Image (cartoon, rainbow, N blue to C red; front, side, top):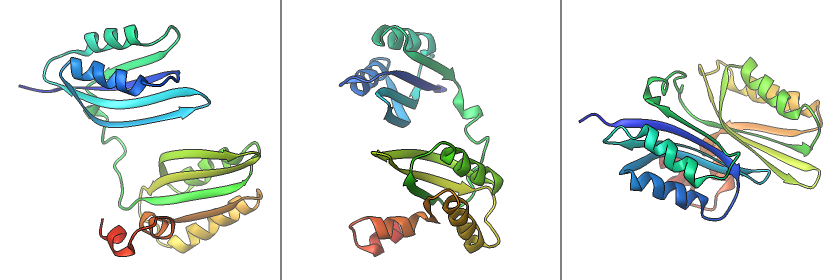
Length: 190
């Protein structure tokens, strides 16, 4: 029997227990959440996930989630996301980009413009605010491995330095080795 797969996106004001209630809805429809990302942005809960079911439950899933969510919530249920899953193939290793400094308009654009201009795909990006100070943290991959990675690193640092930011671009293993408390050997072997 073919499985039915759905990509679901939810945006709604945050409340305790929301992730549990959504997961229970999926389980009640005999589903399995195979991939997900959940975060809070300015008090709004944002969840995107892939769920797999033996039966075609798309409309029942949509109805059950709509009944669970408050008026004004944004809900999208897309069937068969596997047809677009590999639209942008992941090329090789993952890198971490960080930029930190006094928050100001245009920083996010400067980072995104640099990444696009160097054929770097942003897979995950978050911001951490501490008063007027902000840290951008992103996981990125190169479409094609750069011929001169050190030159790309230097260009990223220089681009953000011109805007008063300290920036770094390094391989994920290096970032983890310098940022996690764990034996380096175990981090590198993962």
